[in-house]
Length: 283
Image (cartoon, rainbow, N blue to C red; front, side, top):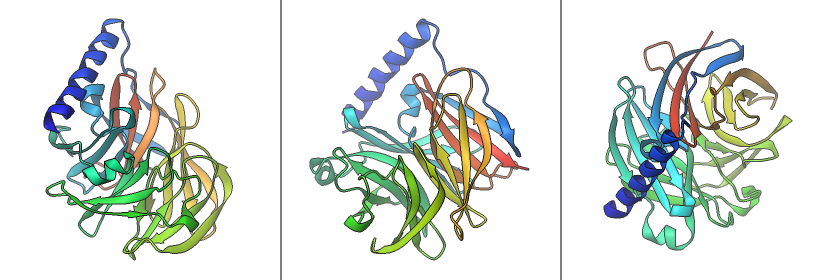
């Protein structure tokens, strides 16, 4: 497994070098296009390093837990990153159990920390049986996997999941999102939905903040909307609009955590040549 993962990242490193040679880079500092938010910091990684955490993010205030995937190379990984230095501390590559890989599971998405476990959205190649996989944040070892019940499956995509203090797990499908879906994290039983008053597209991540669901999408090109959803009413507002920089980049996962520097939102962007963790403070 380690040799396979190393080969994949070496191959990506070679691709990165070629792209750099022809003058392509993830360049241009992101900025706030509109809304009451401030970019406080960016951590930038080349694609070969960033592939191991380019899909999703969780944070405990000291460590970023990044989730990476390339379904066509059958590559998945969990990565620990020091919040303050940006140093990559540890990787668990090819982290999916073999029995799940044999069933076609191939893509980690965004996830969260809850009661001492990492919960991460997981899709199979055919989008037939989406689920949530759990890992130990200390050892990064696999713990458990549960599928989403058919009543909540939708189109079979589950790009992200978030869990509140009472154990309610929230998620959406990725496109034509008209509702938040709710399950019990303990057994994945269906609770219900929260209808939204606006349809969202290309949703990549969501995390709770002060009773609202903050959602990242990959709508648009350089400018990406960050949405706030009222859990009581389903009302959707644009919280702020950020520009990802000079090159187009995909908006990916989100973590909500106080990292001691004024930032509360930490958002992933991934492009052909790099991965960026941007930290934002709400005014």
